[in-house]
Length: 74
Image 1 (tube, one colour):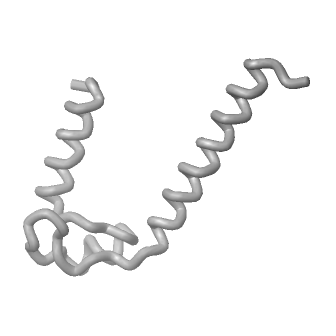
Image 2 (cartoon, one colour):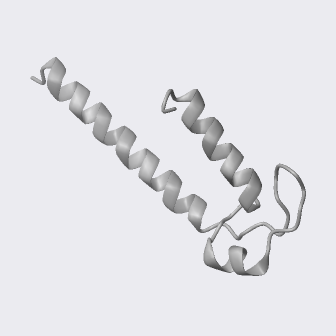
Image 3 (tube, one colour):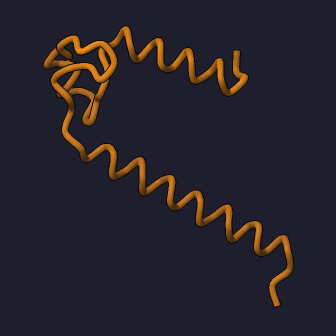
């Protein structure tokens, strides 16, 4: 019979696999031509370099800064 630590480890592994699958599936999506936040055109070089890109450089920097702020990683 599995103890509580085994169940926690099993759950953590399932979450890890699910998150990995989500990331891999997202990367297969085509890049957007226009930023989802500001509607500015995304340069072709950025779209070809970063498969699945959704934001212009400026908006991506803002999103990353906000993400760090909200996660407490100032």
